[in-house]
Amino acid sequence: MPVSLAQTPDDEHAAAEKAGPAVEPSVASPELAPPEVLAAVKELDGDRYATRQAAQRELIAIGAPALELTAQTAADGSLEAATRSISILWTWANSPEQSLAIASLEKLSTLANRPLEASEAQRRLADVREAAAIAAVKELGGYVEMDRTFGMLGGFGTPLQITVNKDWKGGTGGLTHIAAIRNATTLSLHGAPLGDEAVPELEKLTNVKRMEFFGQKFTPELVDKAREKLPTTIIDIRKGGARLGIRGLDSQEIVANSPAAKAGLMVGDKITEFEGKPITEFDELTTEISNRLPGDTVTIKFLRGGETREAKVTFDRWGDDAGAGRAIPDATPAEQGLFGPAPRLAPIPRVPFGQEVPTPAAPADPLPK
View 1 (cartoon, rainbow, N blue to C red):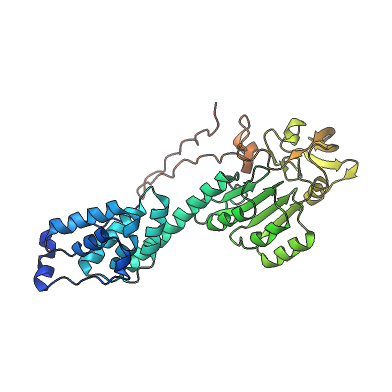
View 2 (tube, rainbow, N blue to C red; view 1 turned 120 degrees about the horizontal axis):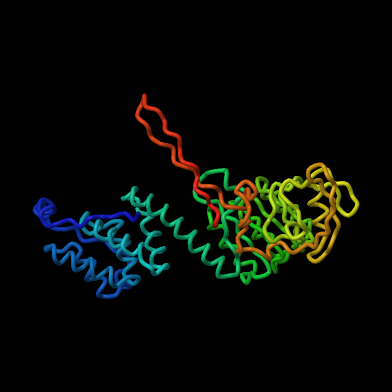
């Protein structure tokens, strides 16, 4: 919620006004401010309440041209003028004009004389910058979705997966927006039109916990250097960009409309062979897939209920389904796992001590009928 600074009526300032004349706010380079701004700022310390109120309304209406002088007055003006200037800055901070809102929050966040307001402004500023960065990523052709890989870890905000694929129009420079997305936990580069010039920019994204380079032609030596500079970031590389669409060797999850789903694989199927090569670990499977290209067809063998079965799978491309959602509409919540919506839990009832706890109602079915 925005900070609300209530207007002060005349009688609340009677004692202050009797104590002596108002202090003129000091300003930096007043000749640079428009005359109407100079006049209005001066009248924030006017003798009459109506004059002060009118000056405050006028400055709010002027907007950006009054920002610098208003911020200066908030920092070192009289108590009356500073309080009104801070109220003006908060009004601008809620402006639909994003540049004015951010600039106002920046000014508020540096107020040494008002630590509470400064702290709140810093928090709001981070939120506004993140929202602006997310909007910029989407405008440049990226996709922002809930990151189910890190969704169970808790922490501040909702973990986000940023997917940059063939639709990306932002080049290397556009990646800078991701640094402002505090809750970006996974960055997925899936066949994005980015070359080695992007690697130094990726090294700056220390907020990201996992990076996927699927179908990217980065020089291996540059990626190795990036690993050194991002020691706590998981970097997953799959050269060919081919996708099967399962999680885990036992197919704990099947992605809707993926090659695995189209080939008839079901949750619980354990893959045992890939093009005649025995598979015992999931890493072995992902290594084999990483050497394939979208459109390649392979034969896999898998166990279902103790019976060995065979299927042909034609790979698609990682990132082609970005933004389409990953829930399997006709699967149970247990079958959807991390790719589907989490079931809503019934609230824990608050019962007075000594009374019997009632049986909670069953969780609501999160799936469409």
